[in-house]
Length: 291
Image (tube, rainbow, N blue to C red):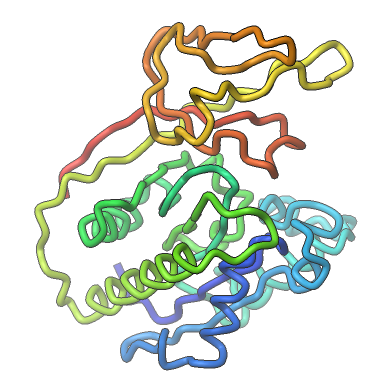
């Protein structure tokens, strides 16, 4: 694989996720923090208008605007569609200053801790394994390529999304801010070592969570939610959910059990931004690989 020449750190893809946005501002004020000798590091506040408005987006979710068919569709004229085209024009694979790797910082209201979200590309999995070997608290959530192709990091092959929580929307939380900054620093160090062929061999068993679908809230015929996340499941991201275990609780206090055939590991449980997407949680299977 060719050397990494340009890395882009992104924050504020969603305007009310402050950790990434304010890390970008810090890195812009103190560029030495992200400088590495073997590649250029650039920063991007992805959705500045939404950030100023303290909203997830202005017209539509920017992190769903990067499919190639949408980027090439000139009839799409929402603010986020135009912004996606601008980002791709400058930094995409065929852009004016294409980037080789993207580290896209997000926060979630779900109890995801430090999560690295990536696809199944071997380079990205090895980066994730390294991050987990340095910090065993790092969770790795692996999405299929089809689930990634609409997101901002899809404009290049390498890198990952860093998802941190639980953090309320429009709020900074000092401990998770510092942990996210440390994770970015470690990722940049890995890319630097890769370029210099100095990556130390590490015998690491990567534990990761493979995406297997989503579950919506129970709804009536009008589409209105009829139950909440059960208290026993709330904030239990990456914990096992066994068949028959309570999943939802109706407004009348009746428990609704998980009816799957096997144990799963839910993530993004009760994510505030996913109510509009019809997602109560994402379902994963826990797996391991040796690096």
